[in-house]
Length: 309
Image 1 (tube, rainbow, N blue to C red):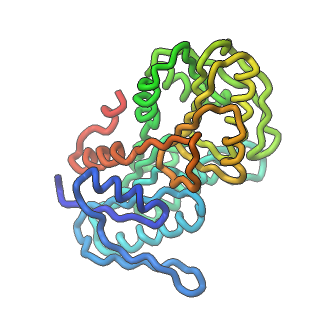
Image 2 (cartoon, helix red, strand yellow; image 1 turned 45 degrees about the horizontal axis):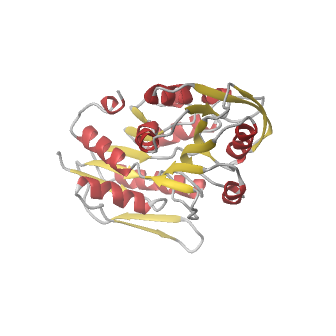
């Protein structure tokens, strides 16, 4: 492998450590501190001149702090004469506003894309973007990895009988269909209407789930309201069990309490975001080995897409 360095922000250092452990290297050293007024200070503790550099930083909560910290790390690297800056962003924050759904609202996904490019990155690696078209907001290479590659092995190991894949809404049908194709299963979906942000009302189950083990898949589990109400709807229609899959465990507000009290039998997430509270209902699968392999392939100029074919 060509000489390169991996830095980490403070958003998810344990994940970064797992990535470098899979590559049998160590993290490059940087000091991240704050001035007394809260401003972020970065100092690179080793030379990066002419190096290919990777920076690992999911922009999870607190999103603003983690995003600003990333910008400052990028600026420090750019001013230190690096060869290229590859940002490894397991969770891409601000992705849920990807279009003008109503008048006088921003498109934050495009704004973040512009800011990252203006800061000086040369490549972005992320996982399960909320909307695939966000890749088009960039004029640089973007690798959008699929969490379903991690989920499929775990689901197969459970040997579920009469399993069926479910989408929590119309927008997630493509994701559910892709996962169903991997496992050779059929799909059903939820018809819901969202009255306001982070609140959802399940209206109807489209498809037959009686005596089925339902596997409900989504990219983000935020307040868990959609997943919890969907699980209740499936159980009311005669489902044997409901397993919820979510790549990004945002788990804001009362998400943990909702999950504990819900009819969901198991929630399976990845470690793109650090889990705040351990729960017997929540299973975390690591995607660090996958990101490590992607870094290795980028460094050796090999295909990334072939991992998902």
